[in-house]
Length: 321
Image (cartoon, rainbow, N blue to C red; front, side):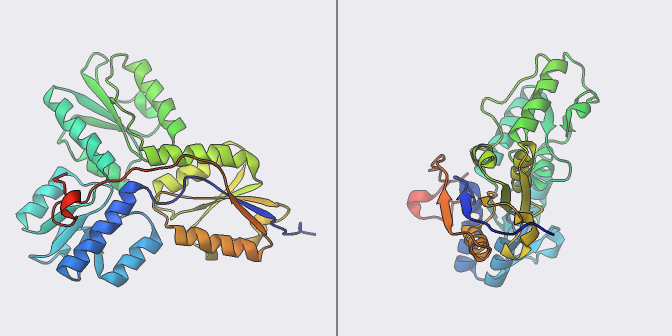
């Protein structure tokens, strides 16, 4: 006989959900639609969340992968993940009006790479092959950058140990995984130059830290986030490594009652690209399964705000970045 389902309490991670870079990216698309009218073309999903993408589609955004799918004279937005220099050149050649929604923390990595490249550095990038942020970052250079996904990859990097070498990191990685791989890089290349500041973004760090606090205090953890979201996947992995059952859902409809059989305390968090409305819908579903108490764990208060690009923000908020 299966265990009884009697969820009693929901503990919410703090912080969770949207980060400043995601807020900025979504606002760029919405303001572009308001100012220039639909449609507005967006290269790649603006952020990796199904709800957000579908909502923007209803407002007039068209998501494309190839710039050849964008008509002449159109307005184009680059996604929060960033794009290669080749994409930037092609967009300029085609004459689009472009607004760049690249997260400023990703742009920081690109700027640092350009500076170090002029000083003669090659690069190792720690990240996941095929992720749009990784493709955009690798595409900042025509050569001299090597992707490593795990410790084993480090040993295969075809670079002399005495070369001028710097390391950069995808911003949405597992903090623990990135540290392990970085340690391997430093063992093989003792003179490697590390970033002045950690590349993994503050929001990724904060959400993983919140899960580390939350997971030991619950019987099961639910992460709200789309399967394509790197940072959401990492939250689930953090909980699982701590021995807590963890599941990821795109919406409340994905919840499976059997996940909560015999488990009275449920943890709930959301990836940096998942809106709070989805969290609220999951809470209502958990209430239907018996939860009577919902409380938020103590956590870091995030106050980061990124200005909008020139041409979309208020004068006081404009920037050329």
